[in-house]
Amino acid sequence: MSALEAAVRALPSPSSAWIYDPAAFAARMARLRQALPGHTILYAMKACANPAILDAAVRLADGVECASGGELADAAAAGAARLAFSGPAKTPADLAAAAACDRPLTVHAESPRELDGLAEAGHRGPVALRVNRGPALPGTHRMTGEATPFGIDEHEVDAAIDRALDLGLDLAGFHLHAVSNCLDAAAYAHHVETALDWARRAARRFELRSVNVGGGLGADPRGPAIDLDALAAALEATDAAGVELVFEPGRYLAAPAGWYVAEVLDLKTVRGRAFAIVRGGTHHFRLPAAWGYSHPFTVVPGPREGTVWSDVEVRVCGELCTPRDVLHAGRQVRSIAVGDRLVFANAGAYGWEISHDRFLGHPRPEQVVIV
Ligand SMILES: *Cc1c(COP(=O)(O)O)cnc(C)c1O
Image (tube, rainbow, N blue to C red; front, side, top):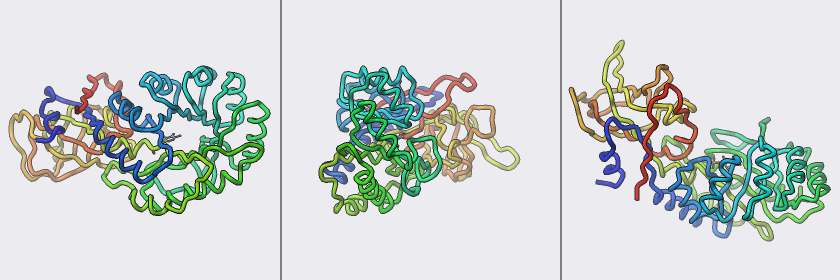
């Protein structure tokens, strides 16, 4: 029995649980190091902030990328050696926390106003201008190449550079996070190349020290991931001489390190359709509802009770009083019974983190770490 299956079977009944495996995160990290030799890798902790995963990131990545003041505090407490701070709505308190941080911290400035705030807060560390440049990349979420709330308009970069320097800020480079879940290695490599070229041309009045191309390496919750061999090959000729090239993936590292588990509480047929109703649902694992897809699952027989249903297509729904609480719209299963545990793999990124578990006041899911 695998460690995962043992963890699933050991859950108390009726179970709703998140299971994390830091070793799966570490394996992805090793793969990424191989594909991006010599470049800096920060972990975007909003993908999965489970303490065991964050601890693995602190040990294995070069630092942690934070998208809120809360994440900044958590990453620092977890011992991150280096931090980056993004996010389009930083408050004066956030900027003050950045200025007071006791370890290397790069702030990704999202607007000219934020530059003023950084100077006011007395931030002495490096600053990178987040810029919305270039065409849109293929992926599930686009941050650049169209109108978004992120970063500074490409046409206002000159003015932003002047403002940062006139305020006495330490301008180190640019932050060009563009996309999430990009599965096209060639398109991603092109993004990296053009980001470097663009940054070298855009840097005036200061020495370009770093170019952060952001995250976005694809790991789709339905299975496929970006081809890192193809990405590495396409980046082989990349000349980053004199500039630190920074990647800050979240999804790619965290996706295979988390499983959502929900126990079947009831089986029934309504108007010709078979339903498996589970303890838990989209308030514990919101991604399928947020994106509108069916998340693949396997059935681990649990403490079975009542009739076993065989060779049936079931729709998997949660415990919420809304028809949108659907984890899978319809999947053929060999055998299923009340008490079985449905295991949703590749759920570690943006799974629990984006969920709204307070809705309806059901108990929270257990958090289990495989050691
Ligand atoms: C969310 C985010 C990332 C990580 O994106 P992934 O698609 O999970 O790799 C990186 N940088 C910034 C600024 C982000 O907001």
